[in-house]
Length: 366
Image: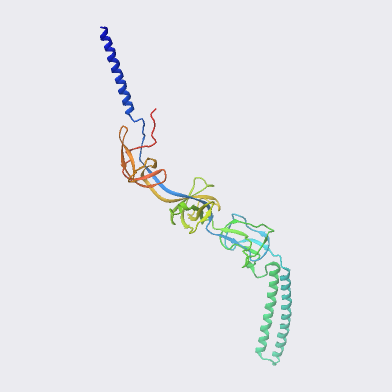
């Protein structure tokens, strides 16, 4: 009896040990890694690159004076809308002493000539009345007298212009009255009353009185890094975001890419320009900083997966994913991809929306 109990205990111990070893073997044979899965979804994928820059008018017109002097009056300010010919400012001329003296001497000379021609004309007129000279000689004397009158008048006008910058009869053409040459908004008035200004001529650009532009024709001007320049071309759409205007995106078209880059901060940058579509509701101020997203490619409502789910075959370099076929069982499936935005990639073929795709950021079981 005692022997039977001992044998039973030994058998029980062997069986229990064997069961424990088998259980441990099974646990050790299981994959300790737990994989999650994701499914494909319908996405709109936009592939783009970003350029930084600012919003500026398509054309800026600098209004400059045709005469030197001092600003006497200013009639407009920044933000005013002007039409071509509208008065902007008035200049007070500070006459040059030498030019003023020469103009005064020219008047005296013209006066002497006029008096002499007047006497000669009246003398010839009396002789013609007596029949001493011919009509031709009288008419010659008359023409000389009229020309002398004209020169005297011109000398006086020139004196007025030298002294004041204007004279009677000039009207809107007076050099002292600075007028707008185009229609547009006044962006800047860089001068104030009392400032001295210099005329625009062949040797000097002259002082800018005002800066005008058509604010309905704005462009984005920015720079693109040389690493991105090969991806863009003229005619691509732009999405402009302005830091000072929240929650609004402005559409534009890329219409200029500089043929030559410039070295800035150790990197070659290429200038680009894009014309903004007219905005009727939002006023965009010139000079605002902006970013332009250049749309390289766009696919709307396409089947897509996260790019992190893709793997690439070491031999063929073709992309593939692993689809779930059972509990902890996955099958390698080659896929054809389209465009990618760095987060999602378009799937052209290989999987469907119902397929469960293995996620490679595996989780350890707790």
